[in-house]
Length: 216
Image 1 (cartoon, rainbow, N blue to C red):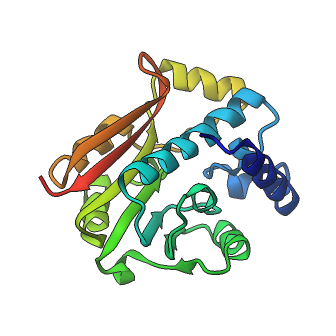
Image 2 (cartoon, rainbow, N blue to C red; image 1 turned 180 degrees about the vertical axis):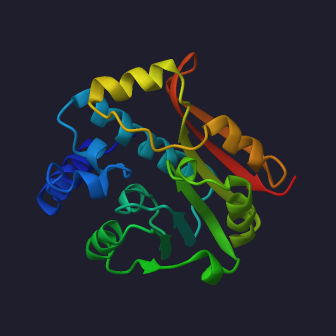
Image 3 (cartoon, one colour; image 1 turned 30 degrees about the vertical axis):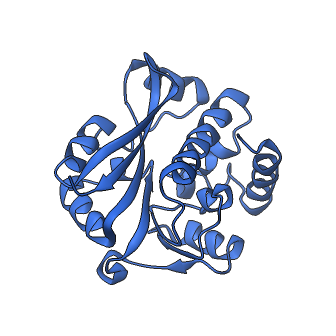
């Protein structure tokens, strides 16, 4: 069940912390402009996919050790139930990383070289499509998972409906180097697809949110 009260609080916190109009250039590749968007439909889709990822976590992987790749402001952390006892994040944007640590004082910054292994869950939510060498990145992220661990992935389809939605929401830039279909293809050598949520629905899919178990 989506916690609408929590989402309203988080939207308010983000609006108070950021001046999205003034900082748009620094924030445009993140989900922050979508989270606080004045268009209810645009904002709903962005929170809906986070809620879907949290649902997959609760169903398949309520683990104690979590790594969040491309974490942004760490919004997924607020939706996870039960809350992880160890939340590490990787975020290359210093503005977003500073906000995350302000919002979640127990969060620990990490880099791929130092991540090691042993995580129960790895998240990559709307982040891998911004990277050029996705296959190599996926290899390294799966190394961070313990055997049998769960990787929760989200990404845009880049189809005509998604592109139309971006235009209607006022986002004209194109920041993605690949699609969720290509990213999922890079996952198949490393794990088994165990669950899929299509948003808003199969046949009219803007985003796919999937859970993968490490190993075949």
